[in-house]
Image (cartoon, rainbow, N blue to C red; front, side, top):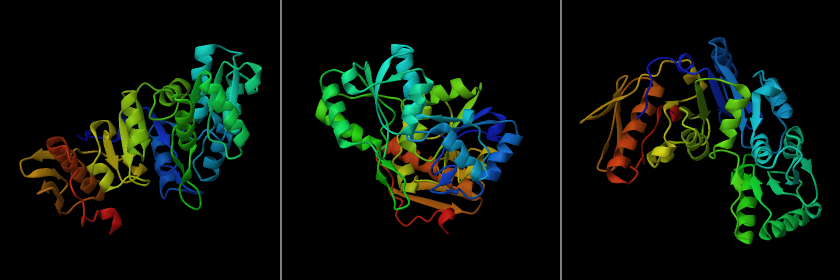
Length: 332
């Protein structure tokens, strides 16, 4: 269940931050995020900005963050393209000939790792793929045939969607799924929840006591579990009560907060007994398969007590509790 007593920045010297839904949503910073991150830095934490999006080079990401009021250097940004390039370089060596199917970020990461980009017909030793809005269908077909014929394949990530101004759109995971079904081959994956991206982040940025911060259970939180790193789930992105109710142990965060203010706030864990889970005046329990939260207190405490009650029920019954009709404080 959820843990910790004092502020998280007192226990963690490296804070690895997912971007969309955590630091920004669309073109704008999450409300309060710049101030919360400045406070975490003032407390001594090193910030790393971690993204599964392989299309943009780190410099582009750093410029965007800085323009939003979140100062970032190129060295603070780590992408799944960089993790994929590291995976290939470690396996095949500097100077390895690679065929690239993706955007600018993938090409930049390969070059920085001293990999040599070649066409499919020029004897590559591996295919690297990542999201790229301008990837041509003829190039997809050529790469698919080569993978089916035995060319090894490393994918930057398997995210099925990407955020756009018009809503979620197909992400690189859709292409990965299509190529896998055509070729019968599953790629080695660099991005979350696989381990290479977070391992690469710790290697590049440093830190003895890292913390992963994200808004997605199946990438950010599962990825933290995969590298045995504590995690903070923030509720400024895609995760809600329904997701928490059905979260398996590998999808459960170490800590939970409404937003990035959770980095510098104290985290008192809920206490459980036969009557439910209690924190800061709230009591949460599941009765007849339905979540009930009574009392009054802070908003973060409401969510933490509710999460513990939901997970307790799922572990005991194997089924998620119903949250129909439950109105969390953040929606009032």
